[in-house]
Image (cartoon, rainbow, N blue to C red; front, top):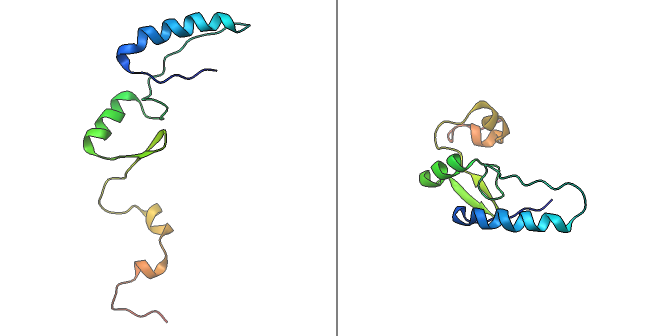
Length: 93
């Protein structure tokens, strides 16, 4: 298993280099081109739209997608501590 990251303009040269390199290894070797951006799990079109929106944060060779701002869903609210869910003026007993 070989993974290569390259610019889209260099795709033919990379495929040719991998085609020649597969003869150096025994057994059947196949070449496949991923639809994802780099080594991320995001498809190329989605990555570009999220990047334009400014919702991507670099995380090593991967990226994190920032959640949109707005109301919190019930799952996120259930993870918050109770002190954050009570109004400021109320005291807990």
